[in-house]
Image 1 (cartoon, rainbow, N blue to C red):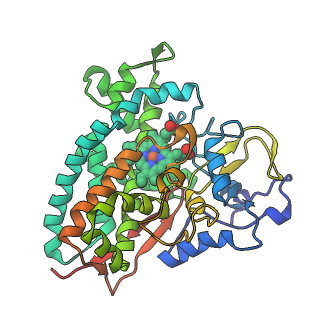
Image 2 (cartoon, rainbow, N blue to C red):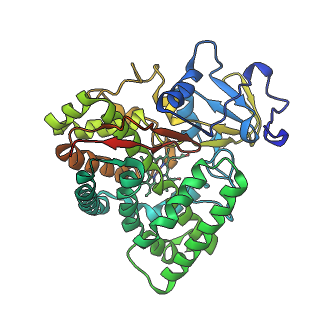
Length: 404
Ligand code: HEM
C-alpha cells in the first residue's frame, strides 16, 4: 500500500484500527463473507481502516441509520456521500447539500420521480424487457450483467432523464468507473468527462426545453433565483451517477440468487402476488450502495473520538445483515415482515433515495416478465460469477444458461 494511502490519525487508538479495503473483487461467497466477518464477535462495531486515505466504518444497523439520517452529527457537505471523498468540478446536488438548501434543490427534480412518471417509464421498461428476452431466450444463455442488467434499467433511466438513448454506451462505463475505480485520478478524469457531457446537455435545455429534469433545473427557481451552471450540472451529475449503476447492480444479485435457488423461483412463479414482497426482500438482502458522510464537528460518538471531517462509511449491507435488526438476516425470506420500513438500502433521512420507486418498479418488471417465460435457469457450469466492490457493489459477470 502506498504510504500516502495508509493513514491512521493520532486520535484513532490502535484497538480500533482494522485493515479493510472497500475496493476488492471476488466470488459471491468471498465477497459476502468478507463483509459479514465485520460482525464477528470481538470485532469493534466502529473501526478505522487506514485504506483509501483512511476512514471510519460503522457496522451495525443502528449506526448506519444514524450516519445516513442524523444531519447534526454527520454531513454530506462539502463532498457528498462518496468515501473516499471524490473530486468533482462542483458539488453534486442534492446529495452535497443540507436542509434547508437540500429541500429546495430536491423540490426541483422531485416530480420526475412521482408514481405517475414512474408508471410511464415502467411501460417502457416492460417493452424493453420483452424485446431483450425475445433475443436472449433462443440463445440458451447470456452474460446477465451485460446482456440484461445494464440494458433495461439504463434505457428506462435515460427515458426518465430525457437523455438520448444512443449515449448509453458512453454513460455506463463512466458510472462504473466512478463507483468501482480505486484510483482516484482515473475516477476524477472520468468525472470531468461526464461533467463536460452533462454541461452540454444542460446548455441544450436552455434553448431547447423539454419535459425532463434537466429542463426543470435550468428553468426552475430555488432560493428566489435561477440555479447557476455548477448547480445545474452538479444536480445532473448526481442523478446520473446515483441512477445508472445501482439498479443493474441489484438486478445482477437478484438473478444470481434465483439461478442458485430453484425453490425461490418456483415460489414466485406459482404465486406472483409475492413479487412486491420479493422486491423489498431482494433490495434488503442485496443493497448496492456503499456510501457515507463526513463528521460534522469534533465529537465522541458511542465512546469513539471522531474529528471534524473524518470520513465515515455506513454500508447499508452491514446494516441490513445485522441480526439485531433482521433475524436470520442472510436468508432471503419473502414472508419477512416490515422490511421496507427497516431496510437501509435507500439510506435514511432527508437524502433517502429519490429514485427508489423507479428502482422498485424495474425490479418488479424484471420478475414479472422474466420468470413466467424463463422459470428455469442456472449458473453456467464452465464459468464463475464475479462480484466487484467499491462505493457500489455489483455482480459484473454473471454467466447464465437455460434449456432453449
Ligand atoms: C436499487 C437501486 C438504488 C439504490 C440501492 C439506491 C441507493 C441510494 C442511497 C443509499 C441513497 C442515499 C445516499 C446517502 O444518503 O448517502 C440514494 C440517494 C439518491 N439516489 Fe438512489 N438508489 C437506487 C436507485 C436510484 C435511481 C434509479 C435514481 C435516479 C434515477 C437514484 C437517484 C438518487 C439520488 C439523486 C439520490 C440523492 C438524493 C438526495 O441527496 O436527496 N437512485 N440512493
